[in-house]
Length: 382
Image (tube, rainbow, N blue to C red; front, side, top):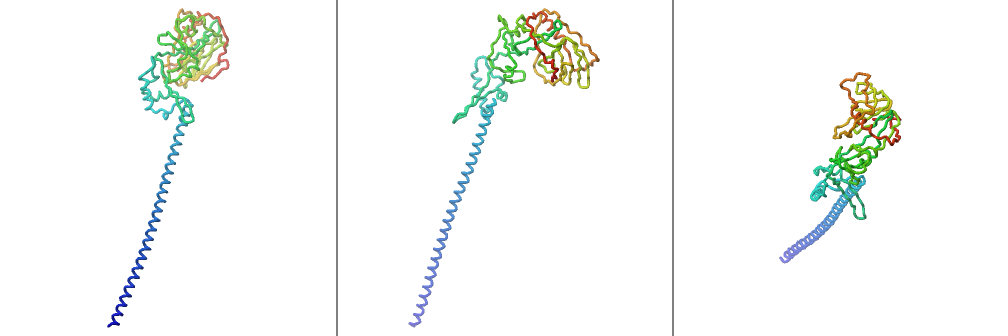
């Protein structure tokens, strides 16, 4: 029994030892698994950190790219504004319509005496065209000076002085004006004289309106001494007018309207006028105003004149008021070689120059200077 009991005890001890060995092995495996899990966690944490860093670098790169693009856009806009400024134009990038309206309200609240905006304050597009701008670049800033012109509420009507050629003793003569343009107020009390280059420097809010700097002297109608142009306009003495003797037998001068020409000739000029499919031959004598249609071409030995399409505008033609009319060289009726139809697209205004020429008979022809008209070279005028 004792031997059997010992054997059983020995078997139990062996089982216990085996269980202990299994437990130790399991603990070792659990420890290894724990170490592996910890290592995996560490690796994941490291990868996650690297991923976050990569994302941050990517976001930073994207931000820098967009910042660079914005800086390039700002630089491009500044260059564009400076370019417009150099060309005398103002860009909406410099002054937005909202800002312009705010500035206009400030100007309207405290306008200078007898001055106003050059156009309707609601017409922002026209105001942009009339504004001027100057720019300067410093080390840290770009400075712009924006100006909008204010106009005097006293308006002047503009006239172009066109010398009227006349015939005396078989010679062509005409007054030589010192200035090509004359502006006068509504009461005809004040006058300003201009040259073509002065008109070209004016601003034009509309086709028949000009805005110029108020830097010229105003002449009074009743002044002791006035230029020839002012005296003629008011039917005063023409003693201070210079008269030119025109070398040649024919002179043509284009009026403000493209299709109207004033002419004077000491010889009979045979001319042909073609309007579409209609052809007319005429003899031009003495002086008058030739008006042709937009589809007409007039040709003679001296000039070739082409008609132009002319849009409607408010430009009007005015003539000096005349008195004590005595004929110098009354225009004769034009001899027509071919019978003209009622649809003829040209007119010759003889009666207009008839009155003007008669007035010139009273002028004293003291100063006769020589000029050479363009027709000496037989130009083609179009």
